[in-house]
Length: 381
Image (cartoon, rainbow, N blue to C red; front, side, top):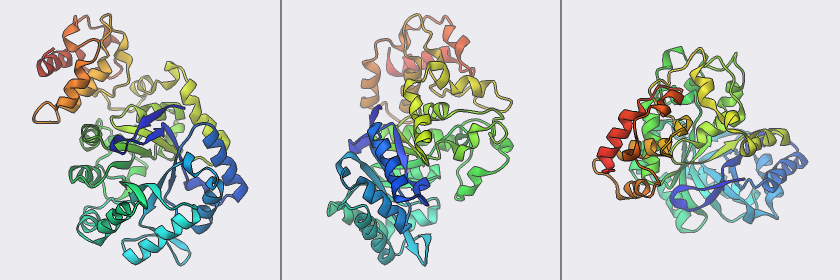
């Protein structure tokens, strides 16, 4: 297992986390087997958004002797009413559900207290201007949550949360297909049957969000990394080619600011399929060639930091330089932190000899030589 720092929380989270959704409906023994196996493999991030009482109790029983081994990402606003899940902003109901979560998980705090499922601007504004945010901030002041996060599928909402400085991290939906789609307040739009009208390159709101989070040290944990399994079948994949869990993980983990991808694991077999990522070959991780040769894709001209350009005779880390350039150009003034990251690289854009070798290997036709020239001008070397 490998770990990454989750932005300004400073928490070191496993690059693969455990999403609890598919633990619903399983027995206590099954839940304990999955959670214990995940822990033994080094997974330390556990997301529990579900409000159903039994699954909460089953998770709590499974971690009761290992609370310190887990970074728990729990959701505030996910309630259980009349036998069903209800997303709520009613403080009385929200508080009851939060207290229930702590009690059933057998803990007195959450590492990450998530403002639950905010996809609409109206909802977001009511949260930050009303009692909901005040309640969450009070939970942090009391030590019942250590850090404040927010879960959303809408990049515009995520950007607003970052810009208003109300969160330390974000739970966001990331996969190669979703990155094409425009922002929406209806999550069902992301699972539309026909992506044809949307395959016009990475959506600018999404690309900007990842860079904005990186620039502001806001860590991202990822949900929907496998597009509900749709990407694993060429008949259901919008690209008309099948990707693997390893490819989807590599895609998400190469986005700026991403620290961990949460898998909704229903079995030990599914955990192992994702853990293969850490022993996978470069070829097995290569989502870029698959997408570039698929019948339907639109990444042409977009740098996805995939690393195919690594065949550089001057040993320039082109993918990293492209990422730093993209981050820097978001700002009116070159940030000192980004310049420092650039300066300590062993080779810089000024070392480029314009041989074009990198461009021969780029699956998406990025004009790397021109980008190196612009980077040299921006950073001064």
